[in-house]
Length: 263
Image (cartoon, rainbow, N blue to C red; front, side, top):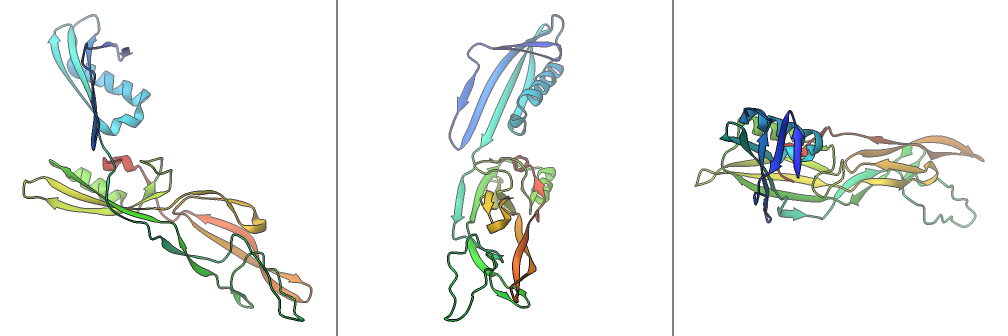
């Protein structure tokens, strides 16, 4: 396979493609770069980088490109793509609680003898003063990931700080957009002067086709907050609290989790 970019032609060097798999995945390919004249290795490396940015943007967070002269007309440009797998070291799936004021379905309405039971259309805990709702358990996956680095920069640590309290803006690891929440990280140097960092996450599944009674289909991302507004409705001689509208609120900012360097 050959690539043309930035005025350079890149031919894959014979026997250069290598790959390793495991906790650390690595793909290495070397290219012989030429432009018909005297080559500049840094310019050739930048041309290949721009090619990857345009055609394979998902690889950029894990990509390193090096270049060196073979002779004045050719350069050896090596692309290394290293990625650390997401590997939880601890996890908890006992779920979380949330407050709802609207059920998914009313399974039954039962009236006392001689009485008529109003149909509140899924509203929970209705009284003359409003809708009380109820706390329920919802799916939640809390997990921690531990990684060691030979060193980390201050800018990387600031990126970890900036990502705390954010949900994933795009697909990340096994999670769809909005399903993962970064709770923050902690760490320090070990006895061998490596930086040991533990990252904490929580995850909730997206609900793209949630049915809420006569309101219809509602689309909710994992960490969005859903609430239902109830209006008073006169039915016969009664004033009932019934659902009028559903609101899906984004309560966490989004971020690119690939800035953390784990996936």
